[in-house]
Image 1 (tube, protein in one colour):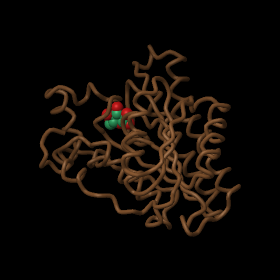
Image 2 (image 1 turned 135 degrees about the horizontal axis):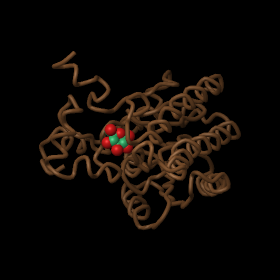
Image 3 (image 1 turned 30 degrees about the vertical axis):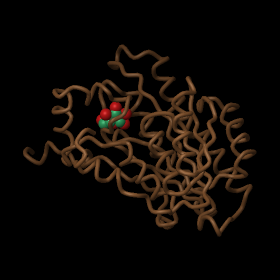
Length: 282
Ligand code: BGC
């Protein structure tokens, strides 16, 4: 984002409304990309934030420093979301340090791309384990905590709020990425089924489905001018998304402003799911 007067740059400068004051939030996969921007966005909206990460700690520590500089509390926790005991320990640490959680973003995800006949079982299993099982484990731990804690109406109208990070590929088939698209399709039905089950407890579960966002996961799709021009053919809005575009949508879904919204997927994709090819064809 080099043009400081671009729509994305102007949006990034806008302050967040203080809709998450008093909230304790947890974001998985928060050391880079969409997770990083979301952790920062929630802090800008007033929340204290647990930053989950895996691998080197440097990225997570940077996010923590930025959050602390905003005057909010930050806590970094290394955990592989695909491992049940690691997720349980992460929640135990978060609850010990923060007391409770009101908002959880199940974001951690990855790609292991391959043509279908070359795809290995390991590539399939890795993507399913992190993207789908990871969200199951994280969401389950979150719902358990909301039920244990009970209402805190001075902080949140709902008992608790969860956002699952999906993708436009929960509806757009994606050859060469069968494992990834299947995991995101799974997130859609998992999220809606959980939302249905816990709605009577006033726990809200929603998803954000990003399109092409400028992050490391899809670096090759935007890093060269040729790739970027090809990508724009898929985006009616005419620009790649920035991580902060997603963070703002997540902040709204976690706030009381969306109290009557549950089981919904909010597409934040610049129109990618509008079948742009049909604007001039069909
Ligand atoms: C993928 C990106 C891709 C985007 C749009 C995302 O879910 O992770 O690699 O650019 O969908 O196709």
